[in-house]
Image (cartoon, rainbow, N blue to C red; front, side, top):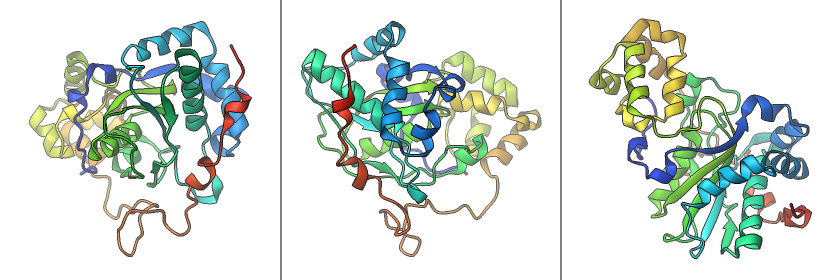
Length: 294
């Protein structure tokens, strides 16, 4: 079985029906500075990458659709996806994206905004993992929200299957907060988060299964899965084996490792001794001085 899910995708509000993405992951990877920003922890490269993808009329219109769901008279927190990584390999893109959005709203709309850098993903990163590994990888976050009544917007570099930001939605909701929107620079399969009925029916036909069989195989109803997860599963070679293939995907083997950010002797949440806590870096980082008018 896959790790427990507590937020049903099909129950998400309308503002979370889609992920507001700007381009494809293939295109983003070709942008100069991507490797430096994604894998080498270069914050300036992260800012330059974000500006090159966001500062255009098409992206402005897309962000305008997202802003329609925000009340600019209420507090807004941008929550970048931040990993706790070994060897100081920090992905600077989500934080740079959050900083640029916050700077823009504060400057041009006089909004009350802030960027939360104290919430970090302490599980094993999903970057480079295939779909089966992503499904079985428990994603755990650490860090408190600021206000229960505020609006939270998640920022990340790519929407692949959506389990990273869905787990962050669960983390924020568990503390009484509410996520209003999710935006990423790029996406892989789709910009949709909530699958429509046609996709659900196409998925069930691809595996020749019923809702009950899906729940038996995964431990969850189909409604707990994002549109991207269903599309990814439909491309998996195991689909030709129907329900047995699905069981093979959801039960790839025993002995799954505990998330890196969990203390292995106690199981308590917190950054493990050999993990670099990125909050020590990001809490003192203010890139807004490099932002230029556009």
